[in-house]
Image (cartoon, rainbow, N blue to C red; front, side, top):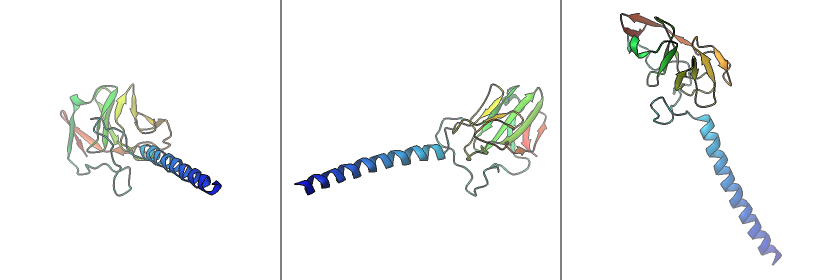
Length: 154
Protein backbone atom coordinates (compact mmCIF):
# COMPACT_ATOMS: atom_id res chain seq x y z
CA UNK A 1 0.00 0.00 0.00
CA UNK A 2 2.82 2.40 0.79
CA UNK A 3 4.35 1.85 -2.64
CA UNK A 4 1.07 2.80 -4.36
CA UNK A 5 0.59 5.96 -2.26
CA UNK A 6 4.18 7.01 -2.92
CA UNK A 7 3.70 6.45 -6.65
CA UNK A 8 0.56 8.63 -6.57
CA UNK A 9 2.43 11.39 -4.71
CA UNK A 10 5.21 11.36 -7.29
CA UNK A 11 2.68 11.62 -10.11
CA UNK A 12 0.94 14.59 -8.47
CA UNK A 13 4.30 16.23 -7.76
CA UNK A 14 5.41 15.71 -11.35
CA UNK A 15 2.14 17.16 -12.64
CA UNK A 16 2.41 20.22 -10.40
CA UNK A 17 6.04 20.80 -11.35
CA UNK A 18 5.17 20.39 -15.02
CA UNK A 19 2.38 22.98 -14.76
CA UNK A 20 4.67 25.34 -12.85
CA UNK A 21 7.38 24.92 -15.49
CA UNK A 22 4.92 25.79 -18.25
CA UNK A 23 3.91 28.94 -16.37
CA UNK A 24 7.53 29.91 -15.87
CA UNK A 25 8.25 29.35 -19.55
CA UNK A 26 5.32 31.62 -20.47
CA UNK A 27 6.49 34.32 -18.06
CA UNK A 28 10.05 34.20 -19.36
CA UNK A 29 8.87 34.32 -22.96
CA UNK A 30 6.83 37.42 -22.15
CA UNK A 31 9.90 39.11 -20.65
CA UNK A 32 12.17 38.19 -23.54
CA UNK A 33 9.78 39.06 -26.35
CA UNK A 34 8.57 42.35 -27.73
CA UNK A 35 5.70 44.35 -26.38
CA UNK A 36 2.82 45.90 -28.20
CA UNK A 37 3.68 48.21 -31.06
CA UNK A 38 2.36 51.73 -31.30
CA UNK A 39 -0.47 50.32 -33.39
CA UNK A 40 -1.18 47.80 -30.60
CA UNK A 41 -0.83 44.85 -32.94
CA UNK A 42 1.26 42.60 -30.73
CA UNK A 43 4.90 41.70 -30.33
CA UNK A 44 7.58 43.42 -32.34
CA UNK A 45 10.47 41.14 -33.23
CA UNK A 46 14.06 42.29 -33.04
CA UNK A 47 16.06 42.29 -36.24
CA UNK A 48 16.79 38.74 -37.45
CA UNK A 49 20.52 39.37 -37.85
CA UNK A 50 20.88 40.04 -34.15
CA UNK A 51 21.96 43.64 -34.89
CA UNK A 52 19.35 45.33 -32.74
CA UNK A 53 20.48 48.84 -33.61
CA UNK A 54 19.92 48.77 -37.38
CA UNK A 55 16.62 50.21 -38.64
CA UNK A 56 14.78 48.28 -41.34
CA UNK A 57 14.48 51.24 -43.74
CA UNK A 58 18.13 51.80 -44.59
CA UNK A 59 17.93 53.24 -48.09
CA UNK A 60 18.99 56.84 -48.32
CA UNK A 61 16.16 59.08 -49.47
CA UNK A 62 13.39 56.88 -48.04
CA UNK A 63 10.56 59.19 -46.99
CA UNK A 64 9.61 58.62 -43.35
CA UNK A 65 7.18 61.35 -42.30
CA UNK A 66 5.95 64.88 -42.72
CA UNK A 67 7.20 67.45 -40.26
CA UNK A 68 3.61 68.04 -39.13
CA UNK A 69 3.44 64.36 -38.02
CA UNK A 70 6.06 64.94 -35.30
CA UNK A 71 4.82 66.87 -32.24
CA UNK A 72 7.00 69.56 -30.66
CA UNK A 73 8.73 68.32 -27.48
CA UNK A 74 7.68 64.81 -28.51
CA UNK A 75 7.95 62.34 -31.31
CA UNK A 76 6.50 59.44 -33.21
CA UNK A 77 7.54 55.80 -33.51
CA UNK A 78 7.60 54.12 -36.94
CA UNK A 79 7.69 50.43 -35.95
CA UNK A 80 7.85 49.06 -39.51
CA UNK A 81 11.04 51.06 -40.16
CA UNK A 82 12.26 50.61 -36.55
CA UNK A 83 12.84 54.36 -36.28
CA UNK A 84 11.63 56.99 -33.83
CA UNK A 85 11.65 60.65 -34.91
CA UNK A 86 11.60 63.40 -32.30
CA UNK A 87 11.33 67.18 -32.29
CA UNK A 88 13.02 68.31 -29.05
CA UNK A 89 12.92 71.95 -30.14
CA UNK A 90 10.71 73.65 -32.75
CA UNK A 91 11.98 72.72 -36.20
CA UNK A 92 14.79 70.53 -34.83
CA UNK A 93 14.19 66.94 -35.88
CA UNK A 94 16.30 63.93 -34.91
CA UNK A 95 15.86 60.23 -35.53
CA UNK A 96 17.00 57.21 -33.57
CA UNK A 97 16.76 53.47 -33.84
CA UNK A 98 13.47 52.41 -32.23
CA UNK A 99 15.12 49.17 -31.09
CA UNK A 100 15.69 49.30 -27.33
CA UNK A 101 19.33 48.72 -26.45
CA UNK A 102 18.31 46.51 -23.51
CA UNK A 103 16.83 43.45 -25.22
CA UNK A 104 15.76 44.55 -28.68
CA UNK A 105 12.10 45.42 -28.13
CA UNK A 106 10.66 48.21 -30.27
CA UNK A 107 9.97 51.39 -28.31
CA UNK A 108 6.30 52.19 -28.62
CA UNK A 109 5.66 55.63 -27.26
CA UNK A 110 7.06 59.14 -27.01
CA UNK A 111 5.43 61.10 -24.20
CA UNK A 112 6.35 63.55 -21.45
CA UNK A 113 9.68 64.19 -23.18
CA UNK A 114 10.66 60.52 -23.08
CA UNK A 115 11.00 57.67 -25.57
CA UNK A 116 9.52 54.66 -23.79
CA UNK A 117 10.09 50.94 -24.15
CA UNK A 118 7.12 48.77 -23.16
CA UNK A 119 9.03 45.58 -22.39
CA UNK A 120 11.02 46.42 -19.26
CA UNK A 121 10.40 50.13 -18.73
CA UNK A 122 13.56 51.65 -20.19
CA UNK A 123 13.17 55.35 -20.88
CA UNK A 124 15.28 57.54 -23.15
CA UNK A 125 15.56 61.33 -23.37
CA UNK A 126 14.71 62.97 -26.69
CA UNK A 127 18.46 62.98 -27.46
CA UNK A 128 18.50 59.16 -27.31
CA UNK A 129 20.39 58.98 -24.01
CA UNK A 130 19.18 56.64 -21.27
CA UNK A 131 17.01 58.34 -18.68
CA UNK A 132 16.28 55.13 -16.74
CA UNK A 133 17.09 51.48 -17.34
CA UNK A 134 17.44 48.60 -17.47
CA UNK A 135 18.95 49.82 -20.77
CA UNK A 136 22.47 51.20 -20.27
CA UNK A 137 23.29 52.32 -23.83
CA UNK A 138 21.67 55.19 -25.75
CA UNK A 139 19.54 54.66 -28.83
CA UNK A 140 21.77 54.96 -31.91
CA UNK A 141 21.08 58.05 -34.00
CA UNK A 142 19.80 57.58 -37.55
CA UNK A 143 20.79 60.28 -40.06
CA UNK A 144 17.83 62.13 -41.55
CA UNK A 145 17.29 65.19 -43.71
CA UNK A 146 14.37 67.59 -43.74
CA UNK A 147 13.37 68.77 -47.21
CA UNK A 148 10.51 71.26 -46.92
CA UNK A 149 7.91 69.39 -44.91
CA UNK A 150 9.26 65.89 -45.65
CA UNK A 151 11.60 63.94 -43.39
CA UNK A 152 13.78 61.39 -45.21
CA UNK A 153 16.64 59.08 -44.39
CA UNK A 154 19.91 60.81 -45.24
